[in-house]
Image 1 (cartoon, rainbow over the protein chains, first blue to last red):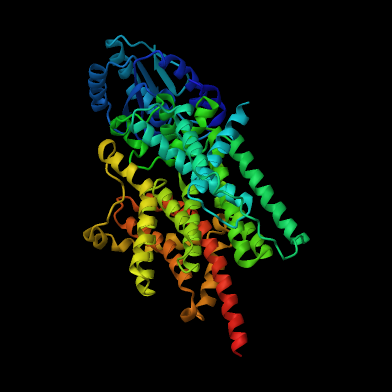
Image 2: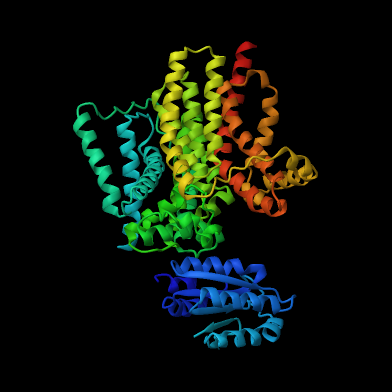
Amino acid sequence: MTHSEREIFGEYNIPFHTTISEVIKISTESDSLLLIAPRNHYDYYYYKLNYYLYPLTITNLTFDTEKQPESFLSELNTNLESEEPSFVLVINNQSFADIIPKSDPVFDQKYLPKIKNTLSDYNLEFSHMNQLLYVSQ
Amino acid sequence: MYLSSLILSLVTTTIIGYLVFLIFKIRLGWSRMSKLALSFLIGSGVISLEMLLLSVFNIGLTLTNILLPLVVLLLIFFLLNIKIIKPKQKPIDSKPKYSSNVFKIFVVIIIVIIAFSFMLAYFSPLRAWDTWANWGFKANVFFQEKTIPSQFFLNPQYSYTLPNYPLLVPLNQTWMYLFIDEVNDQAVKILHAVYFLAIILIFYEITKNILGKLIGIISTCCLATTPALVEFSTIGWGADIPFASFLLCTAIFFYLWLESKCRDRNYLILFSLFAGIITWTKDKGLIVALVILLLMIFNSIYQHRKTKIVLSQISTYLLVAAIYILPWRIYQLYYSPPTNLSITSYTALEFNLDKTLFILNNFLIEMFNLKNWGILWILSAILFLVLIKYITKLNRSYVYIILLPITLGAIQFVNYFSAADVNWLIISSIERFFLQITPLAFFILVLSYQMIKVNKSSKIIEN
């Protein structure tokens, strides 16, 4: 990857981008990546990761905290089974492309514990990178 | 070293464009700078097309592979034509050199703006979503793969990259990556600043030839200070600035050809070439190419011109334009989803008629948005009102040129009716539509001014 340093300098969404160089380092050793992001602006992160991690296969799952997590978890299970991602990235930023990002507390309460449980079933340990990003290791 | 490689890629593009001038033996009485600007535009079309063809034939996209055929072509050309090419004698300028202080002030303003545009393009961070999600991503992939991967456009993972968009801009960026030997999406933003510079040089040349140096430099300054044009030349967004430059050139050479009573072969080849390249920049370019063809046919019928000559000219136009139109369209048949040129259904039109006022309103609001377009559309409105007086005496070539932006505007307008989310579409595309036609609109302003001048002086003579 030739981009990571410039990426840190080059964009507004600082917390996401200061971390993405770390993400790139880990994910370049992966075969495939699963991105979990908010439904209303997942595409920003999805396109961005595709750009920087090409030709890595990236699939994405979106969540909507106004809904119950059950259907999301079912999709997550299906994805983990079929795609077998070696790396999972969760982004919980409700303030798209703003200088000050904002995590969604509903996600932390309702979704995150269940996602962690599901991932551990597939031997994907979860760690907390900052208030917005969680990655499997 | 890094910056010099970047500059070398632009210089090579210009040299390749100049090669086309030599091959077609195009003679223009234009200044060296504007010829270089034209060469850059033509070169960007030639290189990107060659890169597409190399990929189709499974030849890797490396500098050697791209440059070798062009060098061979150049050598063959020189061997065959060495006696024919004679440097054209520069016409002796009988007029005194114009060097008033007013003129110099305008030159300085333009230079400052161009320098500002280059600096901002080179040093500022990436700002536009499309820059990397669509155009930049493709350039990145083509560079890494050293080809246009045939399955790339059909891969659902990349369906958001607008796979049916023509590839001139991404391939131009890949070409620059090959020189600097790495992906640097920020550095290639300079490409749009070069297109901007080309627009300014070509526009000055044509306005100077029509209205003289002083009015030429004033109108060029007005164009160069149009805020949206300057801004878009620095953010490296999409294909709008390249599209604007090709549209301007198509219109200029088509106009000059009409004014030469359809006799000048140089102009015929040039507008055919640009009408071809514009289709390779954006799908919308096909409309421009089609309008030009229809105007050629209409003009021939109107003037009762000899069928043999007309057919030969139309064949030349189609042949030259087809060099650019066909390869991408054929490629799309196999490797790409269908083109996004949608024809709005009558039912959709009927269903969406209540949007008319909303769309018109937004069109007008954007048109007279001084922050984006400066005085362009206000001046246009004033000149339009003045020209109504001379409606029966308007030059036919002028009317034909006006039809180009009108048709593009009409198509844009009709497209809104089929959109599911018209609000989003309008916000995202009206500004870019105006950007695409801005240099052409300024060219039409210059022609309008000339028309008023001519009509006024003939009125004085009549009196």
